[in-house]
Image (tube, rainbow over all chains, first blue to last red; front, side, top):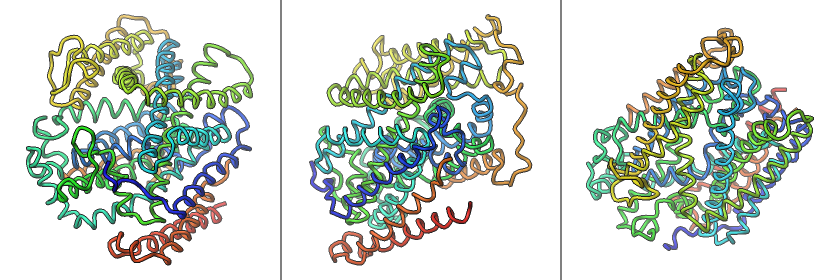
Amino acid sequence: MNPISAIHLGPVDYGILVIYFAFVLGIGFALKRSMTGSKEFFLSGRSIPAWVTGLAFLSANLGAQEVIGMAASGAKYGLMTSHFYWVGAIPAMVFLAIFMMPFYYGSKARSVPEYLKLRFDEKTRGFNAISFAVMTIFSSGISLHALAKLLETLVHWNYWTCITVSALIVLVYIFLGGLTSAIYNEVLQFFMIVMGFAPLVYLALQDAGGWTVLKEKLIPVATGQGFAPGTWSQSWAHLGNPIENPMGVGWFGMVMGLGFVLSFGYWCTDFLVVQRAMAADSMSAARRTPLIAAIPKMLFPALVILPGMIAIALHQQSGGMFLPTATDGTPDYNMVIPTLLAKYLPTGLLGIGFTALMASFMSGMAGNVTAFNTVWTYDIYQSYFAPNKSDSHYLWMGRFATVFGIVVSIGAAFLASQFNNIMDMLQLVFGFVNAPLFATFLLGMFWRRTTGHGAFFGLIGGTTAAALFHGLALAKGCVPGIKGGWLEPMFSFQSEMGQNFWMAIVAWSACFGLTILISLLTRRTKSDEDLKGLVYSLTPKPKAEDEAWYKRPVLVGILVMVAVIILNLLFL
Amino acid sequence: MNFDLRIPLGLIFSLYGIILIGTGLTSTPEMIRQTLGQNINLGWGVVQLLFGLTMLFLSRRKK
């Protein structure tokens, strides 16, 4: 391992870290008094102002994968990575705010699976609740494992000490302060990331010679791998054919697979993020939540992707001496952020940057734990095991589920550390389950004829289609098996990412078609009266005319879309 | 009722600002070289302190 990426923390840096933990725990303790019932614990009593839920909405997604992974992609693929923001996030966030939040918030559902129960039936909710609960707990374990592994490499802390200490901190503050505690700490983490990474990017960009010089330095990175000179500094210009860019993705797969199916499936239906908006103090605040998140979100590529682009340019310039080398001989892209932290931040700011990194892992985990304890308590425990218990019983169960969830997370981290394949396998299966989901919500919210049977069997069909497609498709250079092609590698893709985007398109289409077909063949079990507040055509439109212009979701949504189009054009 | 989040935000970033300013004022020449000849701790310390104080101010004003 290249020695440059070892981080040497000074006493000031440890001080900053300790202060952070003290505040995190302090927030939990201070909120303990507010946790008077299950509604307070799981939904923050629907009392959080929009700017807080907005930043938490953004931050809940800003976990380990985001900070480390987006910087890695910035180095590996260049500016094209911005599609994960400008195509793969903002439009879905605007859609959620304008069209979907009225149903989530207005229906008084306490979770996304509960919305499915109100809109469709018990089995659709059960399928979604159980798969979501399993997924979140494993994601939380993966976060934990990634954090401990990184700290072990960077600062040589013991793996199991890292796991235990971070799990314990997350446990304490959620146990005490529930969702509010998680949300408050996510906002704190958001500011830590901005405060820690902004000077890092500033210094690194200055060292690389500024944006114009950086673009020139990225030319040999692209040509060296056989791509056109501008590939690393343009977002759209090389999407005509999958072989023209390092992602191995064409524009259709990018727009439909990532921009439509995966992005809307995640941002509009994943309870992890939607839960933040549901905690807002009014319908108007709930609708503004994703929009408030969208504004920093569209600027985040500068903080998380740009560092990767700078690192790979400097790596190229130094003849391969900047980033450490991975076991397969390529640069170790995951070390982009740690390498930059170690190189540019002096003791003091290093503490802020390092703490921000730890904070993002921990709040990623906390987000999963709060979503898990809610779905477990309301959608699984209350529905199937113990209905009609007192509210304090469910509050108690929420706290118990927090402990249970964290213990299982630690188990999942252990699995991840021992058996890499199990984690790959699980993530693959989660991918099958998630891919079709948005079709169900779209039909459910906008077509009153959609039936419970249609939704449920459509979902099963979509998931099956995803698995079958995966069995028939294989990316270049992969062996049949977990990467795909386990039935018969019939379709070949330029990259695993391209294959994944197309799998999503296939799963979504199958679910969409099947849900319509089965709905037409089955009888409606819910009358128009039952569906009031759950379906677009049967719900009175929320009025926002009497609010200030910056509080009107439609207007702000349009402005956000215009801004993101301008960004795309600027970096075409 | 939940407390105002701007209070802990204001406190922690004011505190971090003061720590960074202190570190910046006692920087070694080597630290200045690492940050390309600028005293980044001092500069960002001031930014964080101002941010923290603004948060505290806002939390007191709106009641």
